[in-house]
Amino acid sequence: MSELPSGYRVFSHEIIDSTNEEAKRLAMAGDPGKCIVWAVEQTAGRGRRGRQWVSKPGNLFASILIRPQARLADASQLSFAAALAVKHTLEVLSQQAIGFALKWPNDVLVDGAKISGILLEGSSKPARHGGYAQTDYLIIGIGINLQHHPEDTPYPATDMIAATGISLKPEDVVAQLTVSFDEIYQSWVTNGFNALRQQWLKAAYRLGEPIEVQQNDNRIKGIMRDLDATGALRIEVEDGNEVVIHAGDVFFPAGA
Image (cartoon, rainbow, N blue to C red; front, side, top):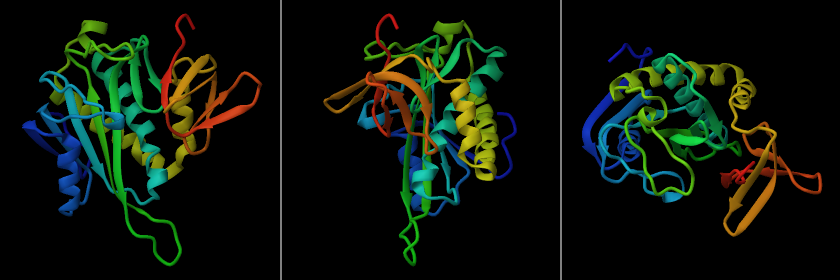
């Protein structure tokens, strides 16, 4: 494994229930952060909204534990940092940009098919003296389809070999991912969200095109225009008004 950024450590496992769960156990035990939990296989991997994440050997399953000095709501912006880090990692290791793009809020696509997903989990400290509650810990779970991908998904999915013919070793991906993430994370710490937002928008999939967002039983249709200052999605609906989306599943209309 290549050299990691200063202060980072990797805990590797052949098989584990979930890298996010193990990172949570480390956080609760007092780990200071800047650590990566990496597993060859997961038995209880999960994605957003409690969905199962298929976790067979050959793909990447890793979780980054950090303790940012920020409100938990602001720290959640690091999902965009993680998506950018995944994109950069795959471009560096494949030595080419092969149609990688970012889908709100935290998927990485290759030519429109999902190759990576990100799951954030965190906890905040009790607020003091009427102030805002600060982040206790943040866990960024990252799954990357390197050698195979699920077939029964509500959206197109792919993997590095299927999409590009390039085979990457998970251990190489872990090392480069840590380097890429730390660089973007440090920029966020120093410069705030706007620079990160601009980078994400440059890589956004179908920015300015039709989009549909599913929120429980409500489906919102419009044109994807921007991210706001917090990372929420801004779309222009049929009557010309703008709607701000803080949570939901994004789909792109067939033929759009």
